Each structure stands twice: as C-alpha cells, then as structure tokens.
Image (tube, rainbow, N blue to C red; front, side):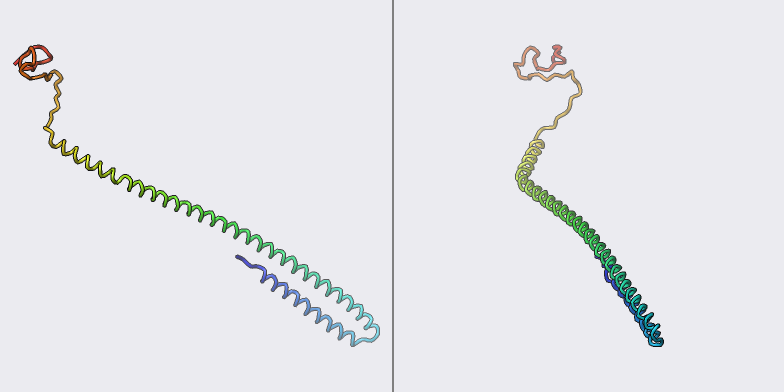
Length: 177
C-alpha cells in the first residue's frame, strides 16, 4: 500500500515556514525604518504594516489552500490504491475458490475410483479364476487342424452308416474306400 501524504505535508510546512521567516524579516526592517523617521515616516509605516498584514493573510490563505488541495489529492490517491488492492484481493479470492473446487473434484474422483476398485475386486478375482479354468480346458483339448480343402466332407462312420459303407466320400459322389 502506498503513502504519499507525509512528503507533501513536509513540503507545505517548509513553504509556510519560509514565508513566515520572510514576513518577520520584512517586519523587522520596517520597524527599523519606522524608528528612524518621525511623523511622516510613522504614517507611511502604519500604511505599510497594513499592507504587510494583508499580504501575510493572503499568503497564509494561499498556503492553506495549497495544503487542502494536496491533502485532497493524497486522499484520492489512497482511495484509488485501496480500490486496486481490493480488486487484487478479490482476484486472489476467486483463484483460491477455484483451486479449492479443483481439489474437491480430484478428491471426489479419487474416492469414486477407490470405491469402484473395491466393488470390482471380487468380480475381477472371479474373472481371473474363470479365465484360468478356460485355459485349463483349452490345454486338455486335442489339437485341431484347419482344413483348406472344401471338397472333404465328414460323414457318420458307424457300421450302419448308410449306403456308402465306411462313410467317407468326396463331394457326395459315391466313391468308397
């Protein structure tokens, strides 16, 4: 957070002190001049003091106005900086809320994944056991050969198989062994 107010007050105080010092010197010179002259000089001195008093009052009013303007500018600057800080804080708050939501989502997903893993563990164990049994059955089966000749036909080979005797033939053409 920024502060500009202190420096401007110091400058104003210095300005006012210089003006007062000049006024004092002027008053002292005027008094000296007045003491050296008689009646005419006293009349002129009184007029001069009135002018000086008016000048001092004007200078003081100017100094006060300058202070008021600087103070107002400093307060406005502080208000702007405070608003900028509030905007930045709000942005950070939004980021924190978004990160919290993301963390909650990830925790929820992890919880769901763990629940699914626990629910499917018995099923996976049963599937592994069934796969092992199927593999055992496959190992006990006789080897098979793929036939690439479409003209061979298997027929019932029992003794009463029918007309062709041993039950083998080619394309049903009646050729017996």
